[in-house]
Length: 132
Length: 451
Image (cartoon, rainbow over the protein chains, first blue to last red):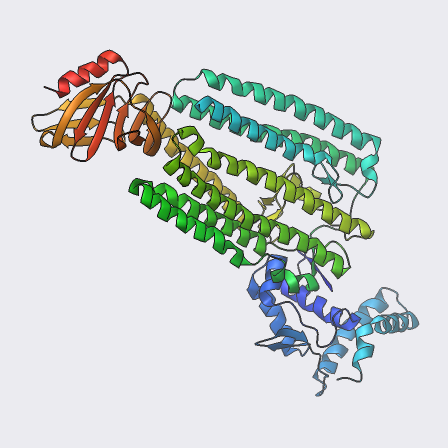
């Protein structure tokens, strides 16, 4: 997949990297079980410190999107949210987005339609359902 | 001889700078005169006009700079030749760079007026598939073993011929190390991804990394071989001009090699990108001033040059700036050191002091003292034939230091004239030859010495 990083953005590079990889998995551009570049490889290609990439990888690992193996490096391995902790986070985030959308004039139906469109375009989610 | 070498070097420099800058008129990855243009706009009348004018001015200035080199032949002192050459080189580099900047600015103006904006700024596209394969794109480092082995044989051969050649013979090894450094640099360089198609991106980076790292391996091997050849010649060939032929040929091979690799890589990359219409465009024109890159948002310290071969440093980046200032400072110090050295040889006169027990010869760097009891013989001879320099300073006018002299072997020379006679001193360490600027001076030294 192509990681697109905005170098002049206020969003830190490690956050952008984390988001890009999560979206890549969701869209199906990164397959479950697929290996990611090593920290060194990625750092050299972006031209940043290995610590920055390491930080992104560690976040992805603790959040349960990838697995880091000493020998084989990082690979895509999403885990389901079993204790409902993530659900709380999504609810909170959605509240803000819905409030913003409503205030800007996006109607209920339109919002739901948008959500369903984006969700159905996430090719990585369909494949995964049974596997995890 | 020095004049011929200088003119040869100057022509090589002029031609390579010209090739580099005239290459800017060719559309390369959507870039012309260091400005990125939207697809097809390079055929616009106004663009072609700017390109034409750039060509004209570049041709004119290059011819002028070439003519401006000629007065160097009339300079007699090496120090003056040196300073003239340095200034000429600076004028050549700065002049050509300035012309590019001027026309690049005109092109940017045109682009702004027509609103030909391409793509986004400051986005880095990284293909994870390319990143994963980046270590396999380079030629194996083990291919450097032959060049290192040859360089070591080199040192052994040189040591066998003459111990004093040991220092020069390490240049081969040093050269190999430099090329390994360049190899590591190309290996570490960031990959570039211009399409959504990973297979094209992989091929695009593969051709670049493979050819350049292979070039480093070949260059290191050639470099070691030519050095070895030089020492074989030193041992077996009488003519001193032929001895240095391999050393002179090596840079020519490198230049041709660089040209060939650049053409091959650019052509392959262009072909790959042309297969894919929708390339990801990134417009970073605002961060280019002519051929200088200054982008504080780009974390890379080196980027591909827009015009010419190789890479340039990102001046908006601490590391990039550091490297550039480092190189400038280093170059300046080396030039200053060399300049002071040649000045001393040029302007400090030789002084011979005959004391009661010894003879002191005072010259810059290579001065010496000989005890009178060690002297076996002093005589005047008409001619000596110098084969090559082992450790010393030599120009058309003088030869000071250690030289290999025919029939005498390694000897100390304090010679300020090409015509004889020479004072030959045989002492316990070998031979020493002295000659003043004129026949009378040499005879004066001789008379002082035999007292």
